[in-house]
Image 1: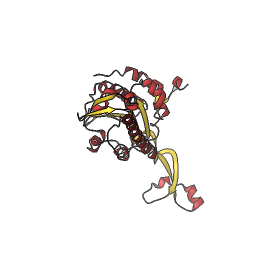
Image 2: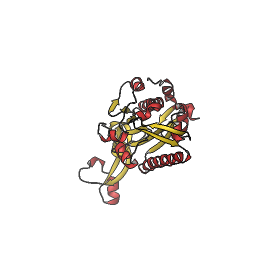
Image 3: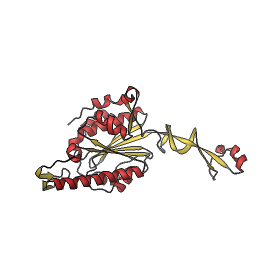
Image 4: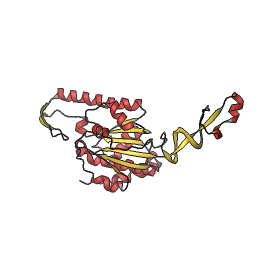
Length: 285
């Protein structure tokens, strides 16, 4: 299946990334970081410690306080954005929207001048850095290993200080704090986008069903009554609150997306209100 991403790319001039502003550190480049460095923009004062560059001593502060004080400046870094796309079978029926989101966000990252990588994770991790819009639409969503297990294998060489955006349904057993640690270790910022189909977000009472786990092929007979739906919604709510709480605690972003909505609607709604993107130009009016 090849996904049409033309409509997604047509939205790029109307938006920009909000997370792509101040990563904490990275490679030398044009963006200002939250960490101290050697750019000309003033950041803070602190006491001199052995090894500091004597050129950064603030002699006026020394005269006032009779202590060695150095001026800190914000580091200039090259912005890096890494998009982690869960390409497991769980996302197969939501693949079109997942690919469109990844292409759209990758294009916004490049527009911001960022070095941009899309990692497709389907039992292994593959880095796409060139011709992303041409290669990503042909990704096969066939992975059978849950995302946390893939991340634990260590195949992803994520850049220190990169902004990381994860696109997944997160419908697998996991510890939100551990998952955030796998994704967020050394990151400048993390955004987790949960992409669900409408019947996953709001399941209906449907009577007897045979459920098949798309990743393990395990089958289970189940009568979907009101009580089962209630329990499912409670579990989904706990999962979402767990991810949301961990993201809040680590200054990350958690956004829920419905695959049944158009990308344009997702941009106007949760992606903007969640703080991942913002409109520019006429779109901001």
